[in-house]
Length: 377
Image 1 (cartoon, rainbow, N blue to C red):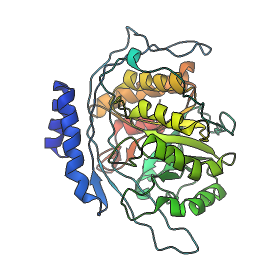
Image 2: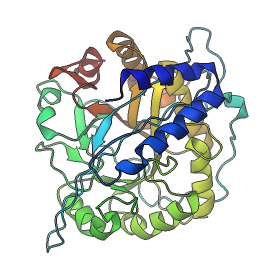
Image 3: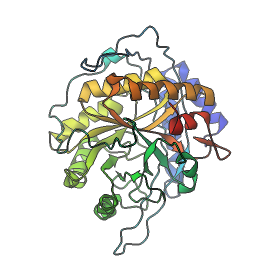
C-alpha cells in the first residue's frame, strides 16, 4: 500500500502538470531496483477536466458535450502493491503465470475532449468473431468481473445473488477455485521478471479454452513504463504473433491501456498501435483502465474511446477517487448507466480494482462500493 506521504505527494499534483510529471518520474526511479522481487508499488498521476452527455438514444452516436447535471471533479488516486509469482520449471504441463503487476495508471492529461483526436485508425483493426458472444444468461447485460490475486478472498463476492460472471488474475492460469469464466492474460513480452510470458502462452491459452474461456486479454498497460512497457510497434508485432492465432476461437482484446492523455499513452498510444497494426491485428474489443476518477469522468473516457475506435469495450481496471461513501456513489452512477443507458451498450464487461484487503475489502469485509458492485445496482 502506498504510504501517506506518497498519497499527500500525489494530491499535491493538483498544483500543476510539471509537478505531476516530476512525481511520476521519481516514483518510477524509486522502484527500478525492485524488479527482482515479487512485490512492486508504482504510482502514476495525470489530470484533466472532462464533460459528458448522457441519455442519448440508442441510434445516436455518443458525444462529449456538457451535461449541466453532471458534476465534474478533478481527482487523484494512489494505489496498491501487487504480486508477481514466478512459474514452475518447464514441464509437459505449462506452469502457472499468475501475474498481477502494480497498476496505478491514472487519469488523463490536461486536454479537453475537443482536443482529442477523433480520427479512425489508418487501418481498421481486424475482427474475425461476432461483435459479441457475451453470455447474458445471468439476466444482466453488463458482465461484472472480479480481478484478484488471492482466490481465498473471492468467497464473499460470489454468494447468493452475486452478479459476478467472470474472473481474471493478470495471469495465464485459473487458480480462482470458482465456476466463473476465467479470462487469461498474456501480460507482456519479458519485462525482466522471471516469467517468459510468450513461452507458456500457447499451452495456457489452449488450457483456458478447454476450460471454457471465451476471451483473451493481450498486454497489460504497455503504455506505462512500470507495466508491460512496449512501443505501439513492438506491441503490434507481438500481438500479431501471439494473439492472432486464437482469432475465431475466442474473442481477443486490444492491449489494456491507461487513461492518461499523454501524447504517448492512453488512447493516443492505442491509435498508434492500430496504425502499426495496419489492419493485421485481430482485435474484437478494447480493454481500458481508469484511475482517480468520478462517475462522469469514467463515462466520458469510455465515450471518447468508442467514438475513436468504434469497438466494444471492456473496463478491466477501474479505481474511483474518494472514501468508501464517495466511491459507492460513483459506483452506483456508473453501473446505472452501463446497465440501463443504451448509449453505453458498447460496454460489455467491467472489473473493479481489485479483490484485495485495503481495496474492495476492509478487515476481510466487503466495502460499501464492493457490495454495490457484486450484489447491487
